Length: 517
Image 1 (cartoon, rainbow, N blue to C red):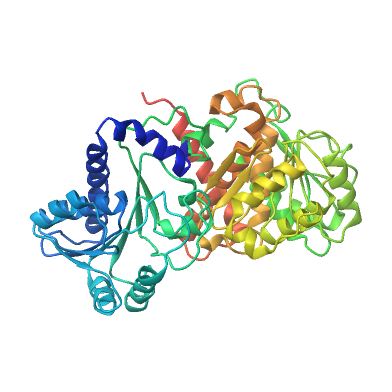
Image 2 (image 1 turned 45 degrees about the horizontal axis):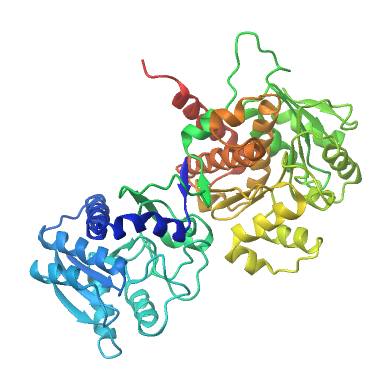
């Protein structure tokens, strides 16, 4: 599991080293890790170091020093490096070392800005060391103008030739929130020191960070509580309940699905198909007869029922996908929510959530649906605000409802009512397509059904019992995202074919659980 710690906690973990006069050693470790990330990017791009060009943006703090020390190492590998100093105050020892290695430096001001931005846009590497974890607010003044000028000259990430590496974090993002105010250099990679910071995993900060490399510098973060965490493949694998010799279809988990309607029948097909591909003993479909026929056409192993939730005995439920304007499906959602069972609630059923439920209820809104959910509970907030600061509002919704809240987006944010936060960035923009949310609901529902009677699941993963359902939702997001990436290798994602990729991802995760012999 990847743990992210707040900027203040990371600085507190650094303090004993600094107090003991070991601050320089920390800088050298950070600089060496940053240097390694730069070398890796150059190698992956098919470029060498000798004859390459680099620009170091060095601010007044320790991040600027780390970047300058990395620049010194690049100089010794044959890279021509220019340091652009964004402040008259700079870490003196690192600048001396940089200059002694043959580097040149220039102060950024209004007069030098156009030429320096053009020079940076023509370089092989640009290292962003302007601001660190102690900074607040976005870039301002000349540095903000430099970033805009660089973007104009270099073009957007993905089409520019300059590789941008952020030192600890892209300058100007909220270290704990990922909130972006003003221009930010979109990094191809971020070398972050000591531990991941939440802002590198959440919202616009995650977009700006690019590929994340956590560089260990020997900090002890055990006294601190993670501000966010991300499941890795091994964590999701630990939540897969593998069948044993004495298992049967009922003991492996039965998932009820009350999805789809005459207006949106496909949502039921997608949710059921995804659940079956994830691995569950049985799926009971409850809904209109015409929709049930369509479900049977695609998934003949599903058991159909046109009756109530009580008639379709299950260990977990998925309610709401495609069920808008269907009174029978609305009643099934209400009954499932009142059953005390794990329930995944999406789309049309989100308006049926009672004032307060338990963490086994997993709400899966997008930002617009979360806005309506919050408004119904007296919190008036706009969709743009939610999209800019998703963790804050997902946590608030979990607090208000008592439910586990999975907020969809470029990064998936999962908030437990305890305040624990999971963030997953496993997907691809190709999953921004109709029906993708229905498959996500089916995956999470299948996991919930298989784990409903598993008393050891939380301890296997190393999370508190109260956070198990948030971990289950995060695991569902991981499987969904990885399946989307697999599907995108064939071209644009066609959601109706995603179960093939879901099954393949589950198989890969199962392999991770098998001991090496």
